[in-house]
Length: 154
Length: 190
Image (cartoon, rainbow over all chains, first blue to last red):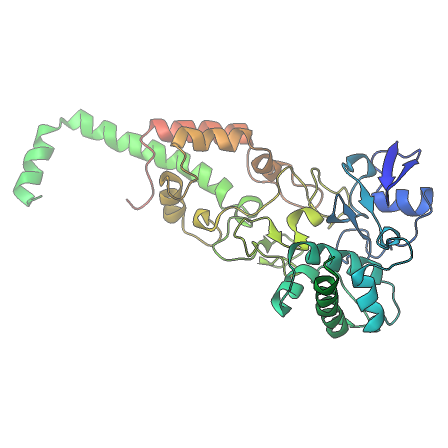
């Protein structure tokens, strides 16, 4: 089976019913997306398929129809994505386990909404749970990333 | 119509014809009852809501509640969710095989708000189904075809593990709709 992950073609020998998350982590060695709940209820496994967020723990790899982007694929060369930069500037993570998923959802939100309000952020991010409760910092970082994105014309 | 005029009109209709009209209405209402059991079933009604929030329900929920994760119809009114959290983030083209995993079907989304069934009476749902402005501009025959052939509607009878399917089948509901139409498509209380 052939996938394109982070602009790289990869060949994997996977049952089509295998969750994409398993294929990424166990077969392709891409460990950014995390296993949290296994039933699309926490968001830790979020990746993008053709730019749209999906919970990779529940999407069968055989049903993937598009290019996959994980958090490893966000930077361009040595330059972090604006959302990653904002995350660092705002020092969002505590334990960090959910943060890759949080960032992928935030990236998807900013692709559609240039200046998200608190309500936009709540509507977009409520499926990404954080047991450390970093939600206020996540909200601040998304607004910071939106400003940065506008400034850079990204 | 005056009482006298009504008596004249009724007198002009033969007694067998009145019996026949009454029997057709009773048969039609019987068919509607079958259809209503499907439309009001949680597998159908939970996503035919008047407000912004799809519902979850089932034996393990203790009654219908709001869908988790702050899921909403979408600020664009599309029924496909909000930016960053569209329905398709979790709902793919097939059911998750895991208990409590996300159910899936092609084109997963909320029905338009004007097609609200959740919490509505049988009479109101019936009136809505017959109103082209609230049924997607469909004839009743097209409503029946939609029930028989739409993949997302079909999910109601194949909802994945741990969820009670809608009663009967798509084909049985389609046939009940055709019979209801043939009996004049009567609605309760009208």
